[in-house]
Image (cartoon, rainbow, N blue to C red; front, side, top):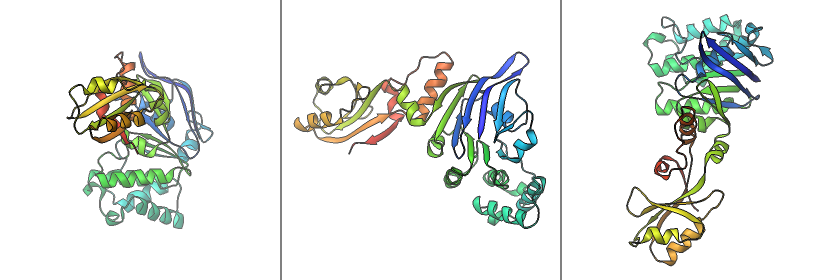
Length: 329
């Protein structure tokens, strides 16, 4: 549905994006991640025909973004980071205006407006001036115009900015509901949001793609070892040495809280059973045992740090308490 091949954008001597290549399948939700200035917005502007690429080719639904911009625009819904709303219109007036700009008239337009308002929970404010709405409601109005014409492709730049936690969950559910019938590119700085709604992730840094895969596969590729966290009720004085004597345990570190230890073993090995049996046999009191894996945030930080010439830290146990944790059954 979306195909980007080696697109480059230069502003004089500055290269904003450099030979970026990726694709989005029909019905797929793709997270497009990167630090500020990485090239996310530039890429989205090329895909929405706001600007041409210097080199390369991008197509949406089979139409070339440079040569067939009107055909592309008919098939996309776009929400930029700042919602493109007119503050002097009511919500209904604005959506009517957008619909007519897209060639919608009569009953089709009325039905589409009602459906968009219902999807985005705008019923209570549909007759209010947009200028009098909160930032969260304006964001939802921006989303309503993006889905109004039921486009096959949605390009959403920070769609949950300014929303409260309840509204964020509602928008996430809406995006997940669009998967299958729509292709979605979602740019976000909220990495758990990408994990919650996206099947695949593209990470861009310094204008170049540095990773492309599912969140789980990215974590597996960058992980150097398996980590286990254990909490013991009455650990002995020489607990570190005793835990490291368990076959297959490479390193043991003292955790941040009393009685907690972080154990490292070879990649692909699950030593939870051996660790549990050892602690129980010594009657130390096993309170908790869990694996620790890399989150998407860990992956993102490692890849973007590496791009900036800094040493990757994914294999350092000191960073692991922030990672996703799975309680052993």
